[in-house]
Image 1 (cartoon, rainbow, N blue to C red):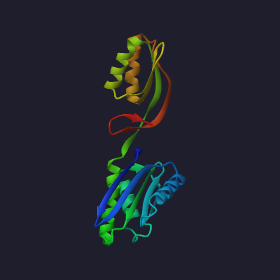
Image 2 (cartoon, rainbow, N blue to C red):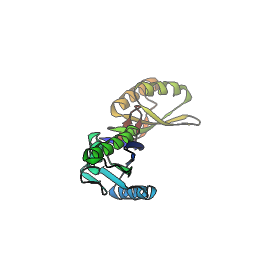
Image 3 (cartoon, one colour):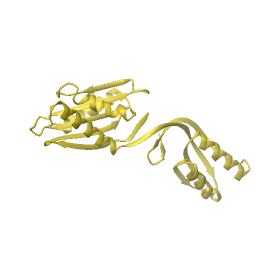
Image 4 (cartoon, helix red, strand yellow):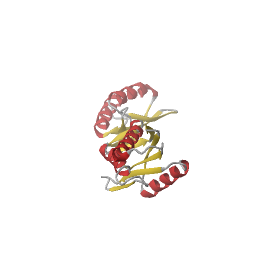
Length: 212
């Protein structure tokens, strides 16, 4: 399952009709409804605001609306873009400004599909994985070594605080944790260890960075 870490906007034009797609991460149906209403106010002069969204660990909740377009030509194609790309807890709203020319059933399906794909293409997505969030306290002599180990093992340094010593806030998959702890034990004779470790589900984005 993929998470929308940051949403995106895309646009598709066919025979002077503009289709503007917006994609968001959502937590529940109330959030989805609120965003849909906000977009309806933003695009108050548009002919249609069609949408689809999925919710749940296995996307068991699925909703879509053609908002006045012929049945099956808007909401369902948008939904298929979301589910086909394995996006979870995701809302996509496609706004149509009518260009004066009817597109027909096939044309509408193609237009709503392409608009949703354009928006999804600029989203930042994350792949679900299991890992830990933790802190590592070291003195300045170890800073370079920690940074090197993290870079070599896909460990994300969320934040670094410099004071009397240095504190790294880290996110890593379980295998990387074992490597880091082994290296820290060997370098410090067991004096340095991770603290406040918390197992959690996290996401790795398309740059390889871990995030919540």
